[in-house]
Amino acid sequence: MRKKILDTPLFPELTAPTSAPRRNRKKLGIPKGLDLDQYERAEDGRLREIVGSWSTIKHRVLFEYVGRTRGIRKNWISKGPAGATYIDLFSGPGEVRIENTKEVLPGSPLVVWNNRGFGPFTQVYVADLHPDLVLDCHARLQEAGAPVDRIEGEADTTVDEVIARIDEKSFHFAFLDPFNLGSLSFDVIRKLARLRSIDILVHVSAQDLNRNLRRYIEKEGSSLDRFAPGWRGKVDTSLADPAVRTAIFRYWTSLIKTLKGMLVAEAMQLVSGDEGQPLYWLAFVSRHALGHKFWKAIQPPPDPEPGLLFTRLPS
Ligand SMILES: C[S@@+](CC[C@H](N)C(=O)[O-])C[C@H]1O[C@@H](n2cnc3c(N)ncnc32)[C@H](O)[C@@H]1O
Image (cartoon, rainbow, N blue to C red; front, top):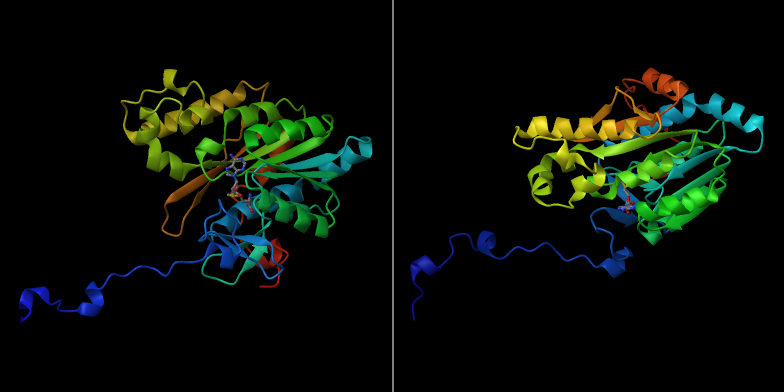
């Protein structure tokens, strides 16, 4: 029988089903729980995260802070055995590649360790939800000579383990770098803030707040309730979205103020994506005037100059 002309596709090659070739997790060597688009195996067999170019801003800010606070750590260490610690509860694997490039750079714990200079860290703690990530991060830090301890799990629980292990009298610097608001439970900050001398740099996801605001408002017990507990009684959700977001953010900073004088610095770095879309804020939290002074001095953070900033790794 002759086929009806309408049944015959004009451009068969375009109408044929197109499915992306399936990538094999096993072949790629990426463990379960990690996104195949977001991780790869480095030449040394360890995991590496694939990141947007804006990650260099986050690392630049870390680099600047650690460089400028060398003197504080040096003084602290010379005072006695208390020491200076670095705590990274969302460590990742310790190495990143900028997507669509061959540029391979250190991840946050290595950025910090590599820039310790004359103000070393006497102890480094790395933790991550994914055991393979923190394992490889630990190995990289050990290779770089860091006195490092690792813990697997959610920041909600690893924070307790870190606090149990550290010398409370040390000078601490913590970096909290989650993917979204839900992973940044306020309790984590509350617990860290009990330490007398601590500066904290917090990644607050503007993207999450932008995309999911109304969904989070609707659902009691959502990410927003973990991020800023008690916000429901304080924020008028009948306002327009931008005003609601601002109010939630203000409320979060006011919560931090209740932690024995901890203060969120007014100068807050907003990191945007390639198309100008807001991605996250980097909020600096400390109760020490000196910490705020150093933070202020690095605002606005200089443009990334990778050659100066990072120890380049072979790509
Ligand atoms: C943005 S990445 C960290 C990148 C790293 N700080 C850097 O700059 O190289 C976020 C990390 O948090 C981990 N993660 C996600 N949820 C977590 C949670 N609730 N507690 C601890 N880690 C978590 C992920 O496995 C991921 O490695």
